Image 1 (cartoon, helix red, strand yellow):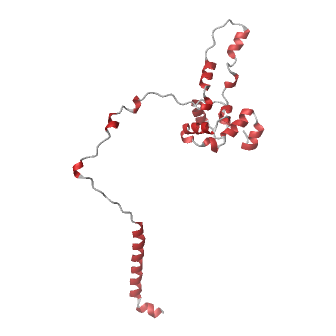
Image 2 (cartoon, one colour):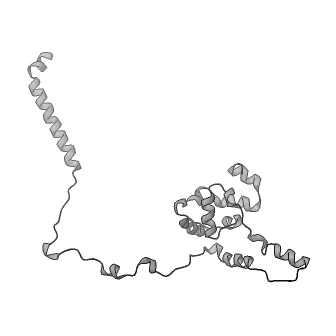
Image 3 (tube, one colour):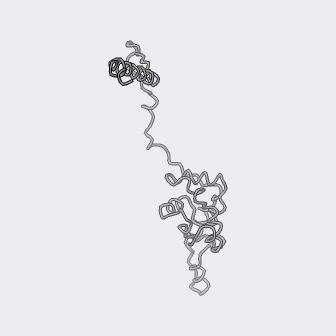
Length: 187
């Protein structure tokens, strides 16, 4: 066998080279991407621009449209505005003074939304701009409201469902700290 290889080594090398070339051709031809180049008609001239876009006013000149309020939060802005309205001057009696210092609507004070795992200071700011300030608001969100709020959160989108905000807010809005800690860990 060794003598056969020694006497015919040139044929073996040539057969190996032919085999490599055929294999390369088979693999390379299967991967080729063919691009068909069509030449535009020379007489057509340059491409026509969209004149409507050129003539349109700049986007900054568009009228301001107020943001849409989620259905579950409708009316919250009016309630907050009413609570923040200045109290008319009244005689300085003990009853009038205590009425002026007491909150106008007891259920409207803000909750510490950072107690919900997954909500940090930046998300709190975003939620406040959307009118969300309390646990009971979050706890009562429907799927449609979650989708609406979620699309407003930008890079934080998807966090509501992933971090179970609704369930956490239900525990926190009812004051069930033991239930919260059993499910989500220490506050």
